[in-house]
Amino acid sequence: MNMQTSKLGRRDRMKIGICCYPSYGGSGVVATELGKHLARRGHDVHFISYDKPFRLEDYQENVHFHGVDTANYPVFKHPPYIMALANKMAEVAERENLEIIHAHYAVPHATAVMLANQMVGGRLKTVTTLHGTDVTIMSEEDSLKQVMAYSVNQSDIITAVSDDLARTAEEAWPRSKPYKPFIISLTLKSIIERIIRPSGDVFIFSLRKRLLFILQISGLSNA
Image 1 (cartoon, rainbow, N blue to C red):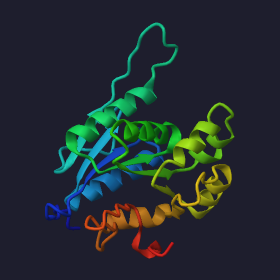
Image 2 (spheres, rainbow, N blue to C red):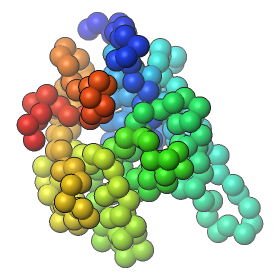
Image 3 (cartoon, one colour):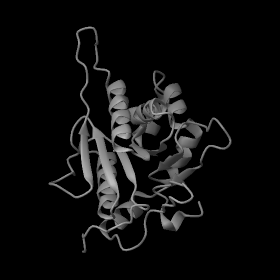
């Protein structure tokens, strides 16, 4: 397998932020492998999380990690991670001129992305990928479901890792405005296959038209 980094022209190279859980769960694995694949294609990828994702091995060209520190004062029963994450996202977005921030697993990442985008004037394109229990369990949690519905619906693109999850999400979190993007369903199998065998153009980018739609798998381009 040829793992050589693709060389893109300056106009085609994108600056992408990815926030995910760094642990062994499936959402973190998918997020990290997608980011590494984008980096191999020549895009500038910035991971933002409280710890380095375990799938980020040694140095890889075009891959950067930004750790999130949380305030730990006695007044806080729990550290305010969402605020710290949003603050770090906005900081990285401004310093690195990010164009896209992609949240993997809605809780709490969709809310943090929404806040960060507001902090930088709403110029970022935002993507939220739903992975499972962030919808099936969290959407039933009274203390979270309203804020999650609102946060997810602020994303420019909403994706899910299966058709069933996409349907569940649409029922749990109806889109608040008719022009909001539909949920693009991505099967986990198709994602992993294209990561392992990156032989074709998996991601569709159009900087000239500024249609920064990532994760639109070629086989679902008419979805």
